[in-house]
Image (tube, rainbow, N blue to C red; front, side, top):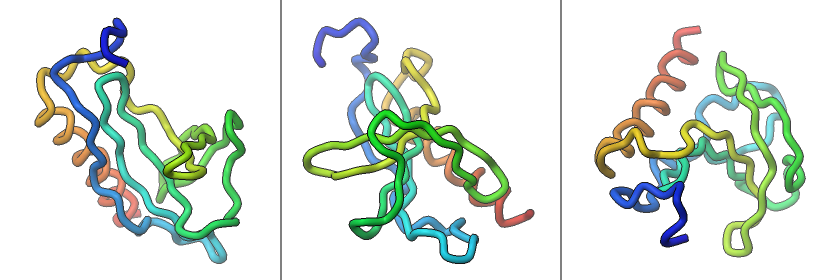
Length: 121
């Protein structure tokens, strides 16, 4: 993607905070991992199924997902080395971030806010 005008050259790709989704409180909800993917072109909240065959959005399909007390619009996606997952855009493009440290700190704050607000509800 080098040279694409929406890239912030100060940033690189980094996965932040991925782990089992602690907010999965609905009975029978499918186990997922939750984290933030930082790239030079966007920052997405990402849900990854922990097992094959779990229900998820089809590629290009959109749907609302409850994460704790918040609701987010996700889109289904697929990558050969990852499999199926769901992504919710947080920032795009990424020009408001001066450096990688700031982008990763923002990703961490997003997750901390999600988990703390949800735990308080």
